[in-house]
Length: 245
Ligand SMILES: O=C(O)CCC(=O)C(=O)O
Image 1 (cartoon, rainbow, N blue to C red):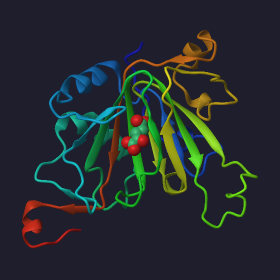
Image 2 (tube, protein in one colour):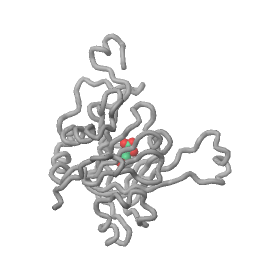
Image 3 (cartoon, helix red, strand yellow):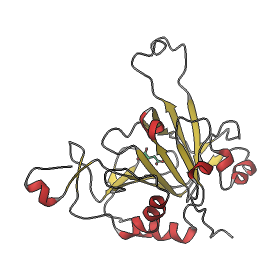
């Protein structure tokens, strides 16, 4: 039945092989009803349009010095069931606040995001829930400044492809967070998807769909929820006294 979810259980069972430590992939993290409920709740009037996609930040965009000034909390439709399930995995243990922020990105077929890192504004754990369509996230090893080979191109950085299916959860932690870049190609189809080219192939919920389509994924509208813990938080009271933590 399509309505089943995968309990996270032991994270080690979901670890994506061969990547820097560590990324975890959990298919069917939410069910179709839960996915639909979230999609219906995304506010139509909060989108910020960029050149190649649109996004919204909840509860608020960060200030110029990467502070979350939060007079309101995350709304229940973003926390229940997603944050509750993620928290039960223990992945945010030791984080300053736990999940306090969510970026919602929408990608139409042909849209993507340039390779980037999320940086020091956040505790180094990102939890990405995918809604709607599937797409490939490209993960690339970051060049070190003193990398002798970086200038002459003699050695290529390592790359991995992660297929994110609808309703899945991808957790990016520790050196996978700090030592890699991630991006999404601006294509209408992800091709050459095989057990050899997709790092999380064995963890996929439905690899058969890709196989039946000749190793291709035809992009449809996809929305991602990227949950994070913003390190610096200022509530209205502490802002009056100029304090953040
Ligand atoms: O949509 C995704 O899977 C990635 C989003 C992303 O790179 C970001 O929010 O920084």
